[in-house]
Length: 130
Image (cartoon, rainbow, N blue to C red; front, side, top):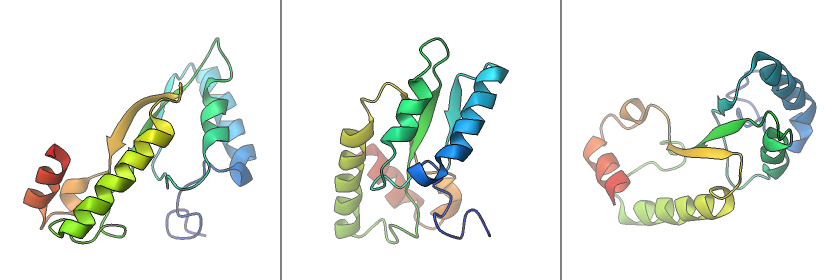
């Protein structure tokens, strides 16, 4: 299976993958890691169990750089006012849900947006700056 193209589309921070990330968190702690950057994170999915696991070891908490998924697959036309409003609503919901969790070190906006939105850079940057 293609980890990015098949369900869960790269979002492996859900309960059904707990065995995998528990294994990996133990290894990361053994390496002395204290921050991870996750790739795909669909904010409507339940991730509290994963976030709690990151900081359950008070002596070796791991913080996360958490991405707000901004991609043409989710939001096609960044110049469209309805799309821009929806992004802001979704981003606010994302922040409300995760920003205060002790595991969250920082919120990231998308990934390689200059590639994904190469023909919409003015709309992209005006959205991010709004």
